[in-house]
Image (cartoon, rainbow over all chains, first blue to last red; front, side):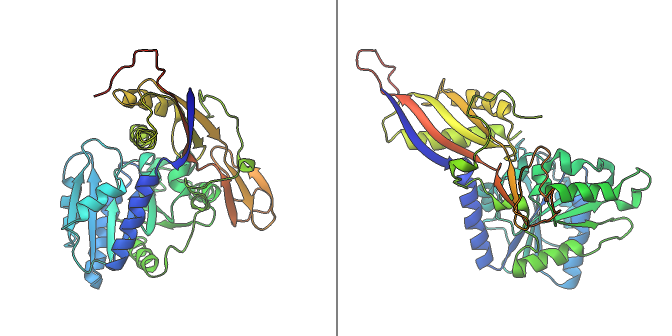
Length: 252
Length: 126
């Protein structure tokens, strides 16, 4: 006899629950997490090193955890800021998950840390799906990556509380069309703040730190449209569109 | 590619759900995948097939139901298919107070299996 179990479970429910618990636990300790996402080579580490240094100079207790498939190079660079830094090697995994992050914080995260910056694995696809218990999700894109990056990676950009443009000092050399980039962000994430930064030219210094501190106090200033419907949404069948069939490809 | 992680999460949840019900061989799993879920159905199907080996889901069919992304403007009440890449600012009034009605789903809807038929010799597990 054929049996059918009506399950109705979100696939990422376990990660989402871990993320929720982590967010609450850390909030109880006065710590807010900032999750940084970008392609490899966008300049996450350079910008983060600058912001960590600024935090130390301003006396704001911060820490950073950086994830890579291999090498401890980023931790070495970030440690130059003088704040506590931890390298996580994912052994080939393309993203961090909330449970992994929680495990790495046990026994390491210094008491009194106000902000924990998590430099995710350089990848704009996979990390987008995993809530790490962050209070602020920041997506970075360098001017060399092209104006259409937000359209190519709509989930990553669509879920960002804040978007940073990096390496603006070389924008002219690579013909970066900033207006087009901003319009593309607006299309997938209307209302999201987009800030210009350059580590070399000293542009946007302290913006990441300021936004992170503000989010720790009052939550993110911007709530992306895409977060207003979660995987958990148990929508009525009236909301369903598309056809029930076996998918070959639903992509365009 | 995180589809393998997604496949493992699906298998884990299905196993936890069907074992208490006595299922020994799942025949199909139905999954809703929203356009904006960030999951590639083909890649997931491939990972699923590999990851099912040696579990009660071995050989199970993964049936995926695509869910189109739709949005609604709170200001002018217009609804529209977001498309891909999605347009999440209102195409009518340009407003940003937009609600996503669908498209982020990544959900197991149901699981099917056949009760072990008495006359057929069954493959005993463990």
